[in-house]
Length: 598
Image (cartoon, rainbow, N blue to C red; front, side, top):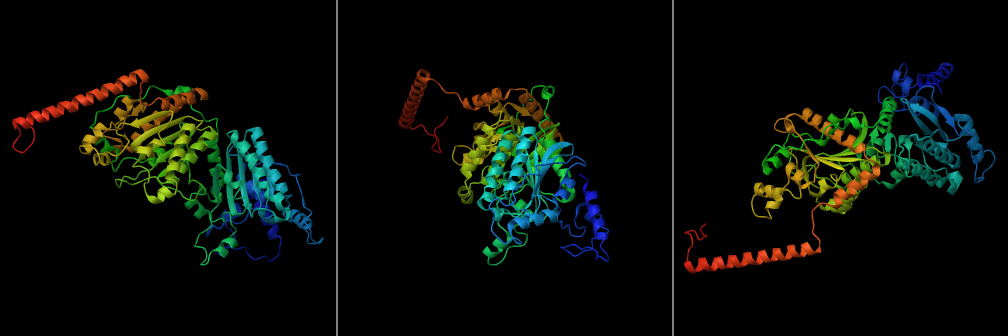
């Protein structure tokens, strides 16, 4: 297939053949498009950025490498499976035939094979120009075959959609194309193969509620009408009208329903970058394992270490990820309507290997900032499951004051969200590395720190409870309680909770963010390479054994002896205290302030 410029140029030549044709203007802002290079190349208005419709052929030419497209399944058709009634001139059959002649398509879906940035892909385009891009029997069969072909060839699928949903004239047969396509997607995904979907204006209806939202990554063009309900249905259900920007790709991004809004000129590059990250050939070699990690720790009082972990200038997880990776594509939200900023997640390239990164983003401008909502844990679990499915290692960075304890969070399923995130970490089929980079507090930290290998920055802390909160219940101040809780990195190393500590530059990571990220990157790469040498079954068995054996217990005989001995010592101590009290009481031997002298 020719490139997009050639296809659009030919269309412009045909338009110039029409005598005295008025210069084309933008449908959105009215600007003249004459001489606009952006419009000529991408059909995008240079003045307001409005994206004009592209045909299926133009879509493919704009995305694929020149000359790589090969169409499949063009002969698959089912013009009128229900023999839908109507007079001959206005029957469904005659309308389909007219659309075929007008659009030069045989169906609303065009599928085939090609390459994007040198990566072989199976591509599908749903064209709104053909009966509103509605999905009928033939369209469903073509899409299902595309996923089956991709599975057989072990290729990713890129689908570009502009659809109004189900084709009514094909009745329930059309509705059942949702599960028909979904079952092929599920089998494709079971092989660890990626599926990326691009939403264009408009994308609504049953397609949005079925095979579109099964994609691993959802992209959208700017200001595209996107959602399950048609715009008219939404307007009828809203008395005061829709708010500005509602039901658009930007609104979906803000609510974590899609992962990115990408302008058309950048779409091909973004897809190529994503395919680079998802290429399973990018693996660390065993030679990059290097020497064992940093095991010595610069002694610090526990309370001092707590304060350093909360330092206002300590690098956040987002900054560390961006400094550690050469490329990072962020995934947004949990697909449930909320995008919690306390969690950052995405796919990044580190030392030539793609990995899923999940970080707890804690702003250091307040003591309890960055509390994680249920949507944050669900976003993290989604990213972990994505890494497990695609065979990408998972790296988590832990730095949090805790989970959001509010009533709203409880009612949104906070407990289930934390447990699901924990289960995703423990059940991930791919290697996992967790790093506690700041303050790891309680269950929120535990949910993301149950990995194959666990590291800690030197000045990080891992707490069952914040020392200030514990001091309100236990005897002593926060500094004394912090020592007793054994929460520093060298305490965790001795307890076997972490495997290695990672040195920090100077007086701490807050003094040099770039050096701190470089030291952390080196440690993470070493652990990923070490885990990469293990067989999957052996690695999963070691993970099970690691978390099965935390905390020593005793058998029946030794346990019974231990309990009896503890009770005996407790009684002896109580008797001694009572005897000592009576002795001092008889002698009247008290200090002037009423205390017992030492």
